[in-house]
Image 1: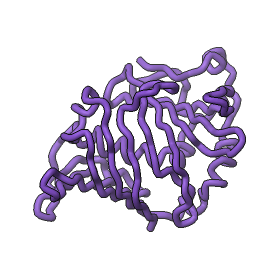
Image 2 (image 1 turned 45 degrees about the horizontal axis):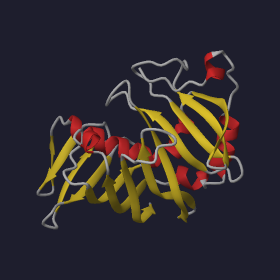
Image 3 (image 1 turned 90 degrees about the vertical axis):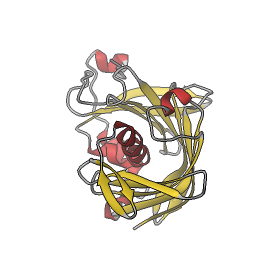
Image 4 (image 1 turned 90 degrees about the horizontal axis):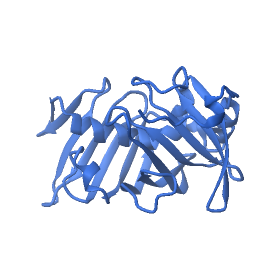
Length: 238
């Protein structure tokens, strides 16, 4: 099972990092985020890994989409543009049940492929804000990557030790700008042994909230090859 604990955390050095995390979030417009109910995104998901894409409902390496995230529930609905220019709509409802929308009507179906694409995508964009709700946030040291120094925070629910029912995260906060630029993660629902990294870039302020317009997924923190990459053309909060 993938384990993101640093040596310091394994040895029992459990210094709370919540205050530092909240300082970073406040400069991102966290108060505006807390008042937002939904988030709409329009953009492209470019895939480089066929092996992981086969676990999703995405058929082509380049996928254009329109996405609607419910920021107060598990709900996320996405329109995927097909080759003929029409859209197929799928999502998970407020309780996490997967569905397709056919002729405007929701038709529920148990689909691991839908859930493994729609729910993680929602999380990838929300995590810089929502990981603050986790019960365990610990300082995990500092690291220099490509000339930039980052403070690392280890985040999970409950005990830091790896468990089947709790993912682990390492949040990388730029020490100079306090921007959340990377999040290392496990994804137990896909594969217990898998871990990956989200790279956040192209930060812009939208409705008072500073958010990345590019999110790149890699398997290693220093990997030069990406799994897939979201590029957002338009977004808004309501």
